[in-house]
Structures are given as structure tokens and as C-alpha cells.
Length: 257
Image 1 (cartoon, rainbow, N blue to C red):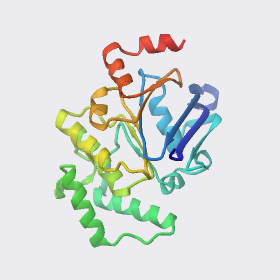
Image 2: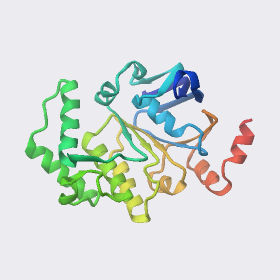
Image 3: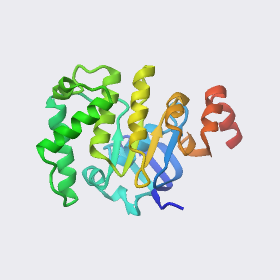
């Protein structure tokens, strides 16, 4: 069996100030082996985005119990930039706009910061430009788009494709995609899925958070997990996503009660 890359054990987490903290993740356990793509589905408010924020170290999300390791290392004890250098990547559900910072400058700075943290040499300008052009072409991002300020004036689909562009440039050890498919038309959805599939490898793991089976039709995950009330209540194959698409979550939640 391949080694476990991401391991979450009895994870509990809250959101908000200490006096008004709300428990969102309540005993979540999950394992994703190297080389596998796992999907997490669940109703609104189940804790899907909270899970992604906890793993990547967003402020305001506090783990109160349990553990989370990547390649055996405790990610909860790392600063966000350490987690990124370790190879943890998050594709945001709502990418933020950063006026004045060109896409290419942002991505190259991120790449070289991570390389420096790992003791690697910086990528040269010619190599970076060549790689950016090749990946941009795969994702239908033209050269002019890559020169614009990050996400400024981009459509929803362009922002999501740009998130996948960053993922493909950084080549993370473990990628988390938080509802990257939301707001995408059929063509953009296929482009995003192709980018995800291009990064599948025995040395990489992925966690795809989604509401819809339509993305999973293109990605074909190894396992599908249902997250409800802060816990994984059911795990299955792609047929589980098909069931949820037809029946909704009520039946699965009732069975787990």
C-alpha cells in the first residue's frame, strides 16, 4: 500500500473569537494515501471550507483537539508559509484580487520563496517564462492575462483557471481544491479538471471539495467522503457521488445517525 500523505485524527476546530467560538469540525478523521485523489462532499455549513482553512493555517480557525500530519509531520505546529514550503497548496473558493501585483511576479515570488525554504535554487527567468507559457496555454490563459494584476478584472472562470495555473506552476506535494468548480461553465470545468488530472502522480495527493458530481465525472476520484456536522459520516467510491447527485444528503445523513 502507498504511504499515507495526509492523516487527520479526531480533529476538532472552532471559528471565531474565544468568547464566541463556534464548533465546526467535531471529530473528523481522514486518510489520503500518496497518489490518490479524494473528494469531500457535504451540505452547506458542514465544515468543508473550514477544513481547508484549518489545514492551511488561516487566522481565526482554531484546532482544539486531534492532529493533522502531512508525510508524518505535524502541520498544525507550522506557520502558513512553512506549510506551503512543505508542499501544501489551497485553491480558493473565492480568490482575492491583489491590485498592483502582476500574476507572473506573484507566482515567481511564491515559487522562489518555497524553493529557498527547501534549500533549492531559484528558478531562472527563462525557465520560469517557458513553464508559465506552456501551462498557460494548457489552461487557455493568454500571455496578456498573465501580465495583469492578480485576479483584478478576471471573470469567475478565469480566476479559477488561474488558481489551477498556480497549482501547476508550484507542483505541490498535496493540493486542496475548495469548490474550484463553483461558477464554471462546461468548457471551463473541463479545463480545470484537465489541469488537476495533469498533476496526478504517485508522489502527490489531492483533496477535492465540491458540491457537484459534474467535476468528479472528469476527475474520477479514488474515494468520496461525505462530511456532515463536522465529521466524515460515509466513505465510498465515485458511485457515492452519483447517489448524492440523485438523492441529496438526507438519506446518507439519516443512515449515519
